[in-house]
Length: 73
Image 1 (cartoon, rainbow, N blue to C red):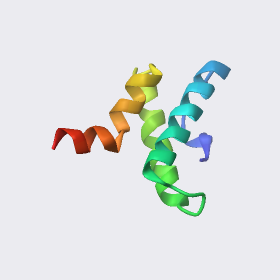
Image 2: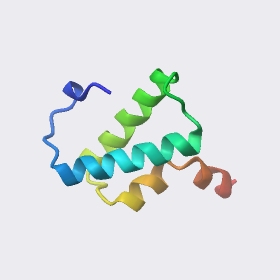
Image 3: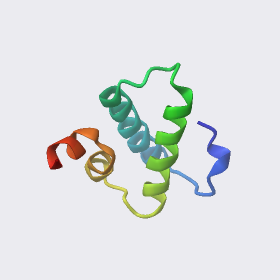
């Protein structure tokens, strides 16, 4: 993911949260490294949510979890 697309400055703790959420969501969605476009879109969405104030790791994961969507149906 090219971070030059974003204007925020992230602390090391922020980056750790973002990385953990991203990795967990990729595993949940079974996104392999070859799924570059989907992984970039997911990273973009997670970072946008973080920049918009959703900074809690659990809240971020819930927001983008496909399991949450399946449970709601």
